[in-house]
Length: 492
View 1 (tube, rainbow, N blue to C red):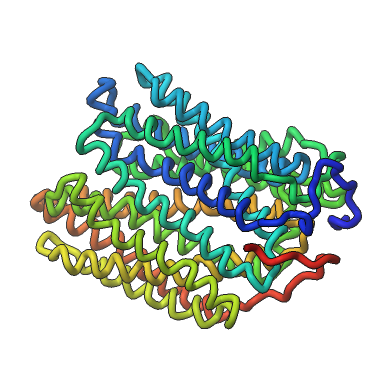
View 2 (cartoon, rainbow, N blue to C red):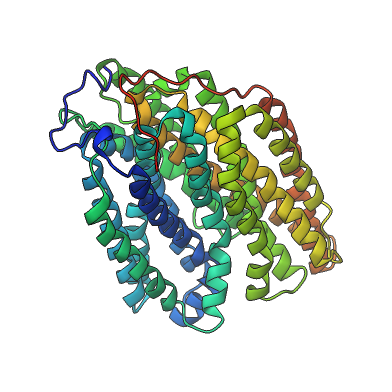
């Protein structure tokens, strides 16, 4: 069944009638930036929250783990939501959930209420990126998608990168509650502008049904993997609540059953996540590289602050400011990379980008207790330069290679893969760091030197994996523009 075959949604506005699709996309980009920025602000604030609420690190970590688990459970549902409901309805649901969750967190008197607020926030956050991807694919013609995906790359890569900086600046003068009070009015403004600007630019399928067994298997599969991967670092330090293999095995088995279920449901177009997206070679190859890139990004995001604080002895604000130039660079170059992609395709960008990213990780493997700040910032800038050159081409190649009827499912898969890859990268870097550090301390090494050795080992493994991924970069190609049956206006 194609979009042209599906039942039209009478509430939908044809794309050709959207006078300024760029305005709608700009609003969605800002909204997505805010919700993703919020995702990484809690990491730096965790110490303050623990002291204020009188909770342990193991308890406080659930503010991050609970958020990730909710994301992992909700994102696979977005393919169904974007097929079944109009874009306007999905947008208001996402931003309303996020705003309510932010208000709950801002008012939270204790841990339980704060955790509830984070979970409600995550429910809205999970919807925003697939919603943004699907809107761009439906509104923007293939010849202009590169520059739009370049803007979206700012959300995906820069928002998480500057989250710790924003949090550090706020916490230097205010309490952790202020993080949520500052985010709330921006979310409410986006909600108000959405009432004026957002229109239904996608065709829906009112007859789409939700397979509850798929939802259950998806929650167990992706939730189990995220929880297991997130717990590996704690397990390596001997602080895991349950054996880490249990959620990983449950997640893997549930995921296998989920895949089998989707393959069966695809025959009647009833899959929660339509895996026929992987029949596209461009989509599959790009997704594999996205896994490597996201793992490298989030692994370095978690390990660099640990290194800067625990090895070099820098404070939170200094760490945030040191990581800021890399995020700014990636944001500044994203639209430029998008324009280049529209002209020359992905190959001239992805190959040098992966080479630079791999070389940067090799540079980070040289970090020790005596490394100068200038070298750290330089290597971090190079890593963001390389990753920034790769993000936009990979995402555009992946999603642009799909037929329109699979856009919602492709967007949901990309979002899900990003979460799993981010958790895997974080787990891998932290585990290698923790195990190497513990081993060195056990042999009588100085704690700071042991941690420096752990950092070296983690980045060394990351560099090797990234170097292997460089080979795959040579096979990325620009997908052919699918025939949509109607011309799309360029975004303004």
